[in-house]
Image (tube, rainbow, N blue to C red):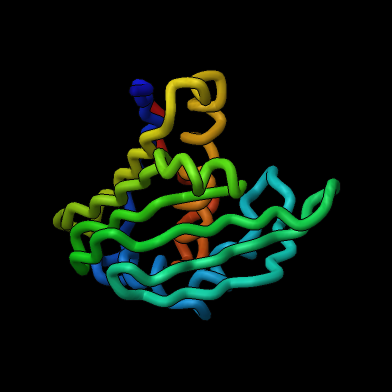
Length: 160
């Protein structure tokens, strides 16, 4: 059996835990924040956002890149609003067949907002991509923050 590695990131929001959680499961909100430009980064051409927000439900998300459409999909394993969201994450049929890519989003309420932590567990053969994966999740959390109107100069993400 293969070992797994983890890519982790954390971000503090001024928004409530409920707002941050809901941003992940509402297709209109997800499309809006996913297209949100982050200073110093290109904006994304979001093509598809489909969400069946229930345990066992599937999501599909895609964006256009230089080399074509990048499609991401997965299945919701746990939905505990506003504390925890667990889902699989795939970018290829090979990954889906192996079924060893698991993402856990936990959200802790704070006095002035919340703290979101994402842990992406994956097969150790992807170890060289762990930092890039964590950075990708951190980027998404910053997009959500900007969607809520946070100060674009205050990068509150940390990649572990």
